Image (cartoon, rainbow over all chains, first blue to last red; front, top):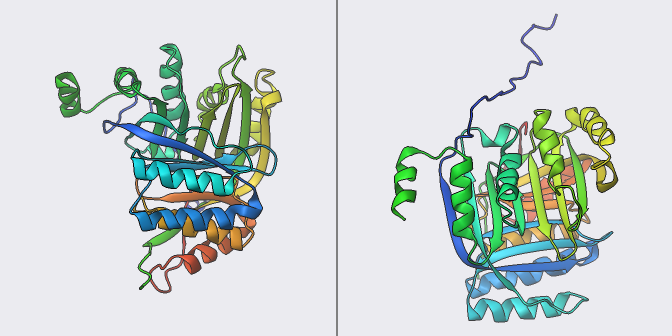
Length: 180
Length: 163
């Protein structure tokens, strides 16, 4: 006979006026690159991206989603530099069927908090805060417990301020935010 | 040259429902309306991504397959949502860690999926993990493909966790 405790799940329910976080992080002036590829060219794309590692280049954030039917958009955010711009340009021209767009430069704000991986409402709270202040969001991604939000260059500090107002920040981070 | 590109482990999710959302930038309704509705129904989003273009905003998210029926009903009941959402049931997420912010790790993982002809419906990096969304029935195959492309601790099985 099965024990009553088998197949039970714990569901976390939170009730707090403002969602607690561990604080916010701002990274500015990152290249924001979109690479469009078909499923058949995923291997070739991977080879060229692996080669970027030979140039001692890393990513700050990467995400991908289905674009048009059967195509996949891979987005890479990386430190801006002349060398990176040159290498990424070669990568884009070698892979894409469409003319490469100029790489944009962006700011990223990211944050996490208690139990972010298994509670609801975090993304909604962040999006709502941005929309309330009409702050355009270029991109967002969350694949674990950390939410990343991408803004136009120069908008990151404003976005961080909006988020600090919308979420609960640890006391020592509040003081640091006030000093900056 | 010795190949020293390695990871410490892999994590596999339970079965998920994948949603694709596309809104016109000129729409009167928020492109993030789905996330409001999911929050109102206390449904956790285990993965999300979004990108804004000149004329529209494309978004993607995953929830537990256990919420499938509830999510279908809440979307079907909202005329501001229903035309914009596509359903892709029965996906799973395989996460490798640590990614080390390495283009080599990223490139090798993409090659693994490409060579194995595994579909990638979405992917994203977090502080230390790099996650890929593929067919749930092929999640084990994806884990093996990644382990072949990237060194991991010998005989380390991919751990299966609830997301």
